[in-house]
Length: 323
Image 1 (cartoon, helix red, strand yellow):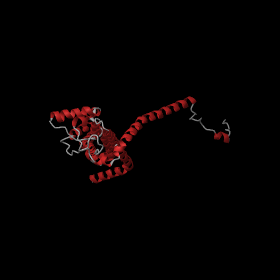
Image 2 (image 1 turned 180 degrees about the vertical axis):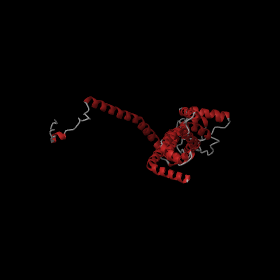
Image 3 (image 1 turned 90 degrees about the vertical axis):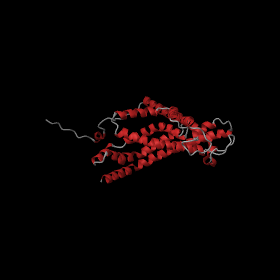
Image 4 (image 1 turned 135 degrees about the vertical axis):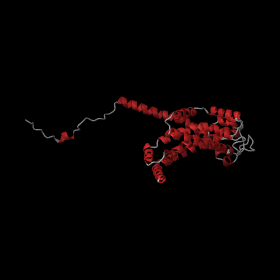
């Protein structure tokens, strides 16, 4: 005999079926959460103190030098040690030339190495290459400079020059380019590769027309960061080239100045002019590194907005090429 169910009232319908899942935090948990938040913000503030202190000191002591027009347009040729005249045009030129030559050599090698590791990396040679890149990434700059000195100068008989400095900088730049390019290539979805293979496109053409173009913004950003890493290296310029107070356009012969070498040389100048040149060159170097990093960030920002357009253009070019 079935029982008659009484109808539910309005108050019963308003009641939740289950008890509330989220409960109010206990006072002890609130205290721990507040303590952890305070600790993290305090650690962040402590980490910023040396940064702003360093920037403040360098800007205060180097601002007078970098705000002079001659600082950017003249060299120190004919300038006496006690005379604050001329500028760092010769050192700026040397820094850019040495970094540029290093990039010309390191970027193709790093790009091809990264493509091999990502696309053809299932071999013992790939594992050995990965291990050697990791080892090279931890090599100090003085070791790279001494290696180039022993090989390029002591063994092969070439003289000290800016090109020797560039060779040492290649050893420092190469692992950064390989690692950044490798990570960017791994971010390209495998579905794009499989779709290209399904169209009958060879693997090398897929890499050239699909994978590399999509990863290009990230690769360029990594290259710029690697350049920013090497322009301040001091050990290679101290070991492999001498200082010149004028511009030398020949990278294979003669001395060539650079910003780190100018700073090191002017440290021995007891005059106030040497003090101004040291801090002005330091501020110039910081400005260069900051500009390169900002440009790399701009490339990443623009790439995030244009990635889909780039993808469509690559696929369209691939289809036209296959046809």
